[in-house]
Structure formats: C-alpha cells, structure tokens
Length: 600
Image (tube, rainbow, N blue to C red; front, top):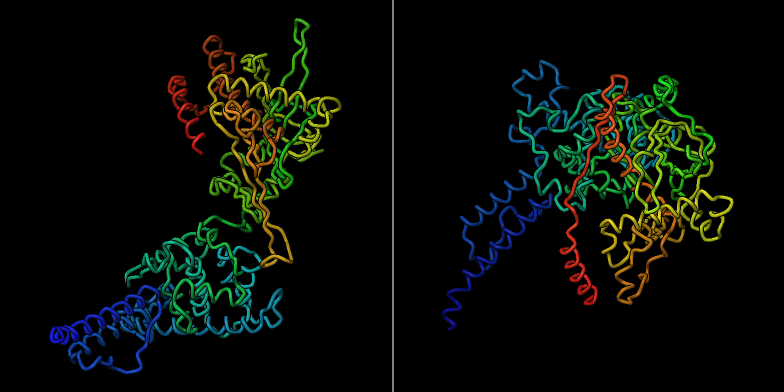
C-alpha cells in the first residue's frame, strides 16, 4: 500500500497544482484584476512539475495578463476606443494609426486621472474660483448618469479647470473615459453585469458611435451609452488610477470621490429612464403654458361648470391632481328630481395636443415614476403640477362625464353626458379628510355632496358584486403599502424610511367569505378600511363603464338617425371583452379556496 501511495502522490500533487492555477486564472479573468507572481517561473512542488509544464503555465499566465490589462500595448491587438472622428485625415491615413490612438488615449486617461485626483483633494462645490475655460463640450454629457442634478453639474465643472492649451479632443477623450466609468459603476450589484456578459467589446472596424463613444451629443445619447455599456475606456482609466478593474472598483472610486452617494440608486440609473427634463423640453413646456388658443372654446363645445362644487381627493403628497368629483341636482320635465354624478378628468390635450412637442415628450416617457424619495413626472412640472393639475380655487380645463344611476346601481344610458368643460375646484381633500368628514357626519350635512358620492359608491359596489365582480370571492382584503423617505439625523445616512400599510383598494364588503366562516375580519398589520379610497375607486370604475356605454349608445343613435344633420360619434374606443361568468366553475373555485383558507 505504501508503494502505491508513493506512485500516486506526485500525480495527485501535479493535478492539485494545475487545478489551483486554473482557478486563479479564471478568477483573474472573470473579476477584472490580476495576480502577479514574484518570480518569472512558477516554483515547482518537490520538483514534480517539469520544465515544459512550467513554461506552458507561464506563457498562459502572461497571455492572460496581457489580454486583461492591455497596458502599454500599441499594436493592432489592443482594443482602441478613441473615436476616429476626432482624428485628422493625415492621422487616419497613417500606417501608425494604432500608435496615434494609443497615444491620444494615454493623454486622455492621464488628464482624467489628474482631474479626479484634484477633485478628490478640493471637493469643490458651487462656482469654480479658478475657472480656466468654458468647457461647453461637457455640458449635458453626464445627464442621467447621476441621480442628483447637483452631481451632474459638478462633473461638468470638473472640465472648467483644464488649461486652454489642452486639445479639445484630449478633453473629449477624458470625458468619454469618465462616462464609461459611470456606466461601468452602474453594473455593480446587477445580476448580469457588463463583465460577465462581455458588453462593449470593440472591433477595429466598429463605428465609434455604435460602441457608445459619442462625439456629437444630444438627449438620446445617454440611453444609447448605457445600452452599449462600453467598458474599455473605464477599465483603462481604472488601470491608470491603479484601482480594481471591475464594476465594484468603478463604484468604489465614484463613491470615494463623492460623485455618487453610498446609497446611489443604481437600479434607477441602469433602467435608462430619463430622470430630468433638458432645457429644450422645459422651453417647450413654457411655450405651451403661454398658449391662449383653446380649440374647444373656439368651437363653443367647452361647457362652463364652474358653478358646481368640485372635490379632489388624493394623498397629501400628490402634486399632479388629475380627477375631481361633484354632484348636481337636476329637475326633469315631469317634475321629478334626480342627481347626476360628475367625474372630471384633467384635460391634458388642452395644453399638449396630439402632435405637439410636449405630447412627444410625454409619449417618449410613457409614464410618471413614483419612488420613495419622490416622483419623476411624465410632463414637465410647470404643466403637470400647475396648468394641467386641478388645483383648488382656479379655473381649470377638464373632460367631464355626467351620469345618473338607477336604484339598483346600474347606469341609465340615456343620461350619460360627456363634454369638455371648465371647472373650479372648491376643496382639495385628502383621504383622511374625507374619512373624518364621513365619520363625523359633516359629509351628510354641510358637505352633503360627499355623502351622496359615498352612498352611490356603495350602491355601485353592490351592483358590481351581484353581476360577477371577483371581489365577492376574495376571502380577505387586499392591502396596499406606501414607502417614503424623510430626513432623520439619527438614521443611517440621515435618511429615515416610513412604511404605511393600509387596506384601501377593494375595501368595503370585501370579507364576505371570511365573515361567513367566522374568521378574523382584519389582518393584524392592516389599517381599517378607507371609505374615501373606496369612494374614489368606485367613481373611477363608474367612469370607465359609462364611457363604454356612452359609445355604444351613441352608435345606436347614429344608426337610427340617418339625417345628414346628425353629428356622428367617430371616437374610437378599445373595448375589453371576456366570457360570461361560469357560476358552477366559480362555486367550485370558492369551495377550493375555502379549503386553502382553512389550511392556512
């Protein structure tokens, strides 16, 4: 047995050493940094690794280091990133173009490393005292590469300290390397980062712009830059600074310099969502605000509803108020009275008509983004929070829908009215305000309109449940939460986090099954049901159904009235259809759900 061990021991040692070296080389290649050996030839273990194996491993290690580092290599094999658009014709035609590019890259990297070193020492803020040039080439190039506008301005002002003698193309090369560093740092913490996916690889025949190295800059370049994720300039810059060449290395550098915060929202930066509006977009919004030509007013189809008492009900932090509610008492021809419920929606097209510049801005963004630390609007705030928003005590343009309800909660089709209108909001209320007014009885006396709206909302909900609404089969209330941040000196990074959990949407009689089985009616962490939220929810559902019924009713009237004087309803509305409720199937599902609830 001892002789067998003696025979296999050298082989096992060789295999173990080879496995260790392979692991180190793989780790080196995948994480972007190198292991340097102090001796030119790897030491052998008990003399069992022969000279051929040592030379092979040494050549493999050296090749790997050169392929990762690419430092000082001016040959064709190096992936040069300096844009050819910045080269002169004589340089492009020169046989030493690779050496020229390498020299320009080296100068750009030295310049950028020096700027960052100076920035770290000075930590300047505000106006630059020793401003040497007005570096317009950096203006707007760091848009959406930081979550804070002040950070972007600081990056732009870095290049105001450069001497005027420095070539503009060297300055632009330095900007490109910093942009690449920011994009590489965004990949820190991502499940699939730029290194593992191999993004940003450059071939000599590639166009500079297609690789995310943009000479001419516009608002769309930032998203293209993030998509290209060219890591080569960033890796070279990190090598120049002698820092770890990886997304974490880039992130550490940016945080240590104060360019980013430690809790920078990298996911938001990676998303490509435009965080701010540029000067042209702001200018377009300001021009829209000064537009006094109201097409609906000129056509005499905008109705004056300023006599109605209109309520807006939103959360306290809402700045874009887009809907309001009111109740109108009407007297019919036969002397009977009724109530018409109005839903008023902010008329965005009054300020952003189709085809306008503001419309294209909103179309490109598609949505507003709501985050714990704030919101990013779809339209510049000068429009979305002022002109378009249904703010109190000001005449606002809206699209108003009026509807009457039958005693069972169904819509009376012939009563539906839809018109462009001018309204004046009387009260801007929060959900808590309305809940308190309903509880104290104010909503049934001085503000009787709120009481009527709440009664109609409950009737509508009962009607929808009788007609197959899925809420009748939900065994518990569906909670919603709101997450927000606030200043707190005692918290980490002086940022406090507030979490508010409520059962509001799909509230009301949403516990029929639980009550039937004599279960607990509320969850321990859920606040009581908000009557105000249920009121608003039902009114919005009512508006959606009423618009569909209005379209169907108008089409029927058009088919009955063949006269040329009748104005046809040419509005196109997308309808969603679904099969009729399968009651036997639902009862089976309800029985299965009750079993699941019992198990839980």
